[in-house]
Length: 223
Figure 1 (cartoon, rainbow, N blue to C red):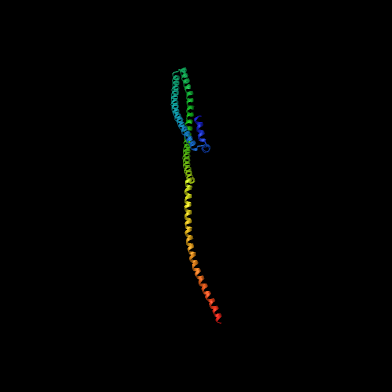
Figure 2: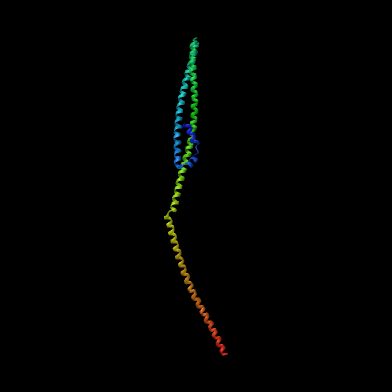
């Protein structure tokens, strides 16, 4: 796969979609970052190579321009000396060099375009890489949080926790029974004491009623 096509695949990749399909999202995102870093190294290497090519082409262009100017001066000198054939030969050499110079300038233009493209791609890839690393950190944080929550749930669901809660409930129930027994005892004592006084009062009323009845009976006998 060419560097430019692979770069396009990475930049245009829907990372969320890739993570949703992956069995291990964390592993997938590590692979994506590794691919981005490798591609970034290659793009920078290609950019450095293109800059070196540009400098070399610039030197060649300058050299050919000097040679063309030199053959032009030679042709002019030959004409001044009435050496027309020699002037024609100088102009032929000048034309050959001019054709080569035109090709070099076209190559130079292509290299400049390639350098500009590589520069843009480096920037885009660095941005994409920074975003992916941020997602990796978020994913790690989410995994750690989920792991902690899972540990808590496991602890809550553990039999030892259930046993502890059950023992606590039994202990609480025993305390409730002891409190109820104490309250019942106090209430019972209060009711017995009240009954005794009620009985005493009832007996006193009976005695009084009996005395009145006796008095009435006695009064009737006398009369």
